[in-house]
Amino acid sequence: MDFLPRHKFRQCVDRYQGNYRVRSFTCLDQFICMAFAQLTYRDSLRDIECCLHAVHEKLYHVGIRGNVSRSTLADANEKRDWRIYSDFAQVLIHEARQLYADDDFSLELKETVYALDASTIDLCLSVFPWARFRKTKAGVKLHTLLDLRGNIPSFVTITDAKVHDVNILDQLIPETGAIYVMHRAYLDFDRLYTMEQCSAFFVTRTKTNTNFRRLYSNRVDKSTGVQCDQIIVLTGFYARKSYPEKLRRVRFLDSETGKRLHFLTNQFTLPSVTIADLYRCRWQVELFFKWIKQHLRIKAFYGTSENAVKTQIWIAITTYVLVAIMKKRLKLDLSLYTILQILSISLFEKKPIVQAFTRPSYTTEIAADCIQLNLFGS
Image 1: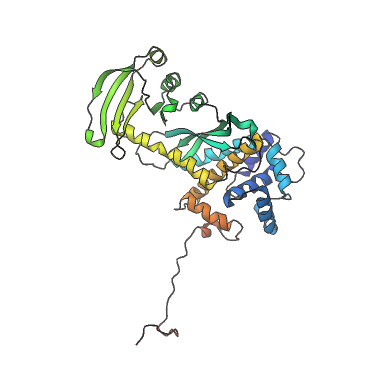
Image 2: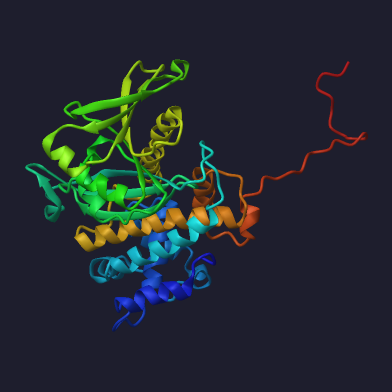
């Protein structure tokens, strides 16, 4: 908890009057309890209450001042504005991106590269009727713009599951010079042309019904998997009207799967094989969704209201970013998965935090006059 900027957290709480008429169980108490549940994989509010009562003499030193009970925690998740934790997550994301700004990923590029995608979190329709998006199904959708330097989410929003992925492009403010890698669900020429006008670049895949005319082709090395590199213009009436500029089309043959992939981009200077590699890096956002679903509690929820669900998701994202900040500040050469596993069994150990992540380096030395018998001696 020492890695939390407490002053920034209080600002977020005061912005939405989170502690208004609260006597004992503050927003900070709520946050620490929910972060504890994320780090130790608690299954329910009763589970959280039971485990924290077992270490009640240590709660004051962690920062919890109020009495922890499942009814109090349930009321806090139900009534306190989820935007408190949304805003605080953005504070931590800004700090984490500064820490990871100089990190490299698989491609040596100076430009900032983002991967954009969305993932649906399934819910039970009878328990979460407010989240209905099909006849017999409910859910919410988590839209994430992932900075590939450090795999830090730079933009996160939670919507109804029925909101189409492409609509999130309206909420993004394109960063000049940055590269946005997206799958073909985001292929909307009106919105992509907005990126072009903001001097931002995109890499996406074409659809089968995309009509175009080739202007000329660039020379390619087919041993790299690139089949062709073309400069094109769109010929469809509405597509041409929405995006009147030239585009670049790269066809790539994946030697592992045998699939032919067609990429569309407004980046004309990078090598064609780099365009294909950029799209391959988009898989990092898929791994991000898989990671947080497997290792954080965002599939089983402690409350049924919309506010409780969004509160839990935002605190899960905050916990992920907080662990990433701690890893960078302590210069730990461990994966986030390993760090979470160690934290899950050592949260209330009274030891320096670096020591918890340091492997023991001692060795057992056997003296010459050891009294232990030799099992295989003659």
